[in-house]
Length: 74
Image (cartoon, rainbow, N blue to C red; front, side, top):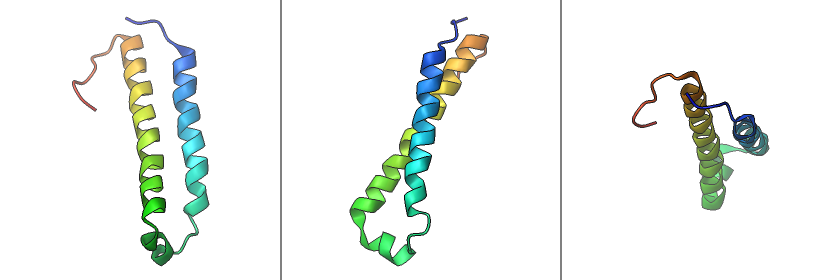
C-alpha cells in the first residue's frame, strides 16, 4: 500500500475544476462558429483531455493507496 498523497489528489481535482470552468466559456457558442475555428476546437480538445488524465491519475493513486489492483492501462 502507498500512503495517501493529499497534495497530489488536490492538484488533480484543481485541474479538473479549472478546465471545467474554462470549458463553460464555450457552452453557448453556436456550433457553426465553433466548427469554423480550428484553434478553438483544438483548445477544447485539450481542455477535455487534461481533466480526464487528472481523473485517471487521481483514481490510480487512490487504488494504490487502498491496496487495490491497478489496471494495466487507462
